[in-house]
Figure 1 (tube, rainbow, N blue to C red):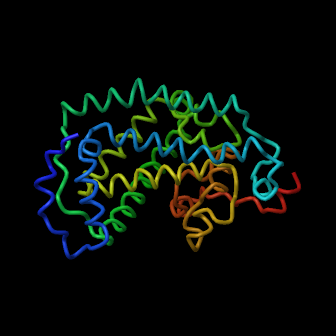
Figure 2 (figure 1 turned 90 degrees about the horizontal axis):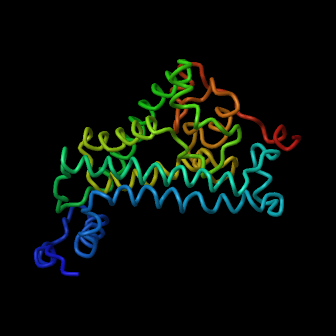
Length: 279
């Protein structure tokens, strides 16, 4: 396919201030401009990330005790998702994307067309700081939304209850959302990068990373190499915190970080491994 950007990009030098990301960004612009400039690219990126991140943990769930190396970290070992449950959650997510997310993207094309992609890449520092800012902002937004929807019976029943269908979450259940919740999360995901004036590459990176964090929160395993163990000082709740939220819905409202639950006294103590193994 002819890329009209090729003659232009061939003669532009890399920005010397960022030798790491500029060559990669130039490569994307030169070879994949039609793909990455499409308004449907973020949807494809998000859905494929959800699929490929969830798949390995579904294999672990189906194998169960046959893989004791991993099964020993299962938070609720007596509750095992079935293949039917996994397929049902995948189809809910697929249905939501086909009949709600894609039409919303089509409407947004006419209301607020995406600006052209910038020539310069962000610096590594800008990428890191903006990703952290986006995570903190979304964490705050969702904590407030989540708290309100648990405290208001009607909001919980009609909007958020579908996500609590399972007491023991698993990877595919991370996107089992009602349409209002899905559109709210989608609104933040699209507007927050605009609000913070983020580079498209930053937006795509945070899309993939936040979906990984969301899937990891729902896997039902307290694996020693997950982010909540790698990041010090208990700053991230991870799967143990969110698993406890599904068991005790009045606790652990924040999706990623732990500071808001600590500040407002909604943090639940996490189960100890010896408690888990005794069940």
